[in-house]
Structure formats: structure tokens, C-alpha cells
Image 1: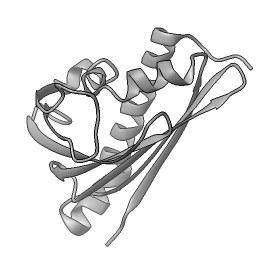
Image 2: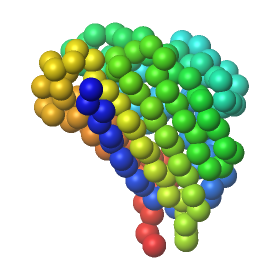
Image 3: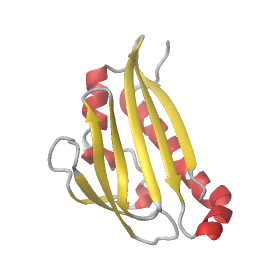
Length: 155
């Protein structure tokens, strides 16, 4: 069983409160997801984030195949971190930790995603040229989009 990790950090020139307000609102996930993914929230984003919250989405990650994705917000510490875990969706395991902290002139956001691809050895074979590059592309898009929305951090 192979578990992969994607680790990303980004600094933004905003306050901790601004970062938390944006990142902890599930509706904003659509804003920072590439349009081609057809991201659509079905339910669960109608109130502020809380532990135990179930959010259902439709995404189209590859080849136009629509996929239902159900996540649960399992942990929330206000203005520090939250964790979402896939309950149903394209991965065998998806555990995404979101951390934010104040730094001089802004905030540092850190994402750590531990995930396992489906289809055992076949999934492991396609991971380096299909899954990993797609995840990198999605998180690079997020970096660019967040900089468009909030500006570029300069220490």
C-alpha cells in the first residue's frame, strides 16, 4: 500500500482573519479550483466550517468524467488549521491538512495532503504521469488565483 504526500506552502500579504475567513468558507473552494474541473457544490456549504461537516461536490478531474466527492471536515481549530477527509470519491485515501499562521507582513498557508490512488498497482503506475501532475497543476492554479485575489507577498 503506497501513500503519497503533496506538501505546499504559500505566503500572502493578508491578515490571519482574512485568510481564515476565505479558507474556511467551503464556497470559496470553487474560486480556487480550475474551471475545467467543473467543480460544483451539491450540499453542506451553507454554514461556517465545523468539525463533522459533510460537503458533497461534483468534480470532473480527468477526461470529462464527472465524479461525486464527499468530504468531512474532521478537525477545526479557529484561525490555526482544519482537516478535510474524503469519505467517497476518486481516491482510496484523501487526508488534507490546512494550516495558517501569522508571519511578518502576512500569513503562511500550508497544505499537507496524504493520499492513496485507487486500482492498486495500476494506480501506482499511472501516478507519476497522471495523478501527481494533475494535483500539482491544481495547487499551482490555487497559488496563482490566491495571489490574484490577495496580492503577492513580499517580505
